[in-house]
Each structure stands twice: as structure tokens, then as C-alpha cells.
Length: 190
Image (tube, rainbow, N blue to C red; front, side, top):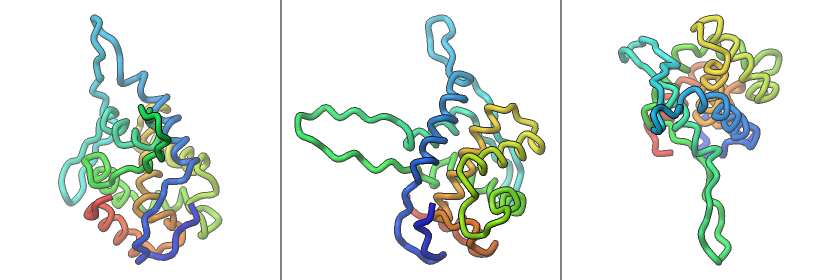
């Protein structure tokens, strides 16, 4: 998460492997709760993981939308070709519905998230991915009352959103720089 050069850095940001691994683990926790077989059909249960009200109005995010948001980071892609091909870059978009809702929630909860993620050091985006996600999940359980697995998946989505929007420089940025990065992330094509 250390390829952050500054708030005006126009370079792309590649999600670190440990964050992609966390997305895969969150998927493994959440998917069995969301996808069930009923009467021989695969059904997506409508589980609401996030609901809040901000200046733009009411926002809700379902577990299925959260799964689709993180899916590009861990989806295994099979190539049917005799010729070797390069793997496509695994990346997420913050311009879709889930990305925008997570950006809005992140902006709304910025102070709390900074306290959790940037404890002690101001140079990295948390001491480790796992520690940051566990801290955010504990905060979600305490403040939003969500169950453990759902809170962990939502915390992973929030952490991915922060890393992508701030290009890994969250703890080195001022609150104004973070807000600007969040606003720009929802506008630009990923």
C-alpha cells in the first residue's frame, strides 16, 4: 500500500495482494449467507448490510451488491487459448452503485475510520490489512449492530474503498485531501 506519491498523483493504484486476499475471505464468509438453493433454484437473499442517511439522502447497500463490488479482486478467470495470454488487471470500480455508497459512508464516518486505521503511525494505511479490517469490523458491530461475518465483509469493502480512493495514502493525507480524493474517486472512470 506504499505506492502513494501525493494527493495529486494521477497514476493508477493497484490493490495490494493482501487486500485482494481479504476480499476473497470476505466473499467466503458472506456468499453462503446470501446465495441459497430453494426448490432447486439459486436464490439471492435480500440481506441489507448498510443503511444510512446523509446530505444526499437515504442510501442502502445489500450483501449481494457488496459481493459484486469485491468480486473483480478475487474472481478466478479461465482463459481458453492455446497461446499464453496475460492476466487482466484485477480492479474494482468506485463509480458503480456499491462504490458510490461506500464512498458516501466513508466520508460520513471519516473521523472514526481515521482513529481506527491510523492508530500510532501516520505513514501507512494501517499496520496491516487484517488489523485494520478487524478494527473497522469491531466498530461496525458496536455502532451498526451487524453480525460478525457481515460486519467483516462490510469492513473489507470499506477498507478497499479507502485504499482505492486515496491510492494507499489515507494515513498520510489531511482530512481535506481525503475528502477531495473521495469526491474525485466517485467521478472518474476507474
